[in-house]
Image: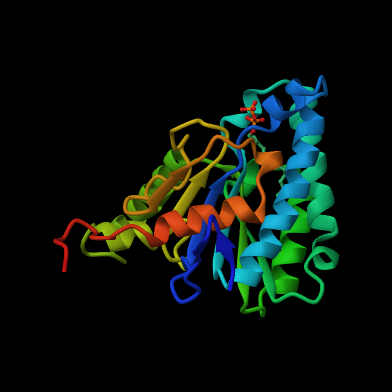
Length: 243
Ligand code: FPP
């Protein structure tokens, strides 16, 4: 049994899908007089620990916001460093998850990514597709509005081709990157910012939101448990009435 502030986490009510906006790498580095890229590197170490923690807690899906469609507007040096980190992670992915039941997937617009990253994504996804424990989903060159626009564009093409007779929510959801992934139960954002920043905007309509001031490199399993316990104290009604 795991504890936080003398309370116990309910292991029978672990959110099935946790989504995380890993914010605050830059501020963490600045506070220490280090480069923003150093902050991202520390952030990737935190991510490794949180993937492990989610796996141990029995979370089925973990989605993290690693690079948004808007992040290209950052200085070239920072973008290059982030791409380098992502490439490194993907190249070592099998080693990272060795002995654990973790499947790795990537959501986002792949066409806009460097060729070598696309190659690694294809390889890792193929090599881990049979794994059924934790689905670790990396949102890369991802933007919620871009995702919905692409889904609607495909839907219109299918309507024109006579493959679909009715436009409804299910037909849109089927064309999102997350078509085979349940919506997040809990969405966490670190660093004190209180917004979604174009992350899973369709899918998080009924997610429980948890915001904390901790900068991402300082986020630990203890903070994750705090977020889960906050989730466990809430009543989810999905627009209905309390039972
Ligand atoms: C936001 O913090 C963070 C990012 C844009 C990048 C997140 C990437 C990682 C944690 C590491 C790489 C991921 C993988 C999958 C290996 P920020 O830079 O906007 O922080 P700030 O708001 O303090 O400036």
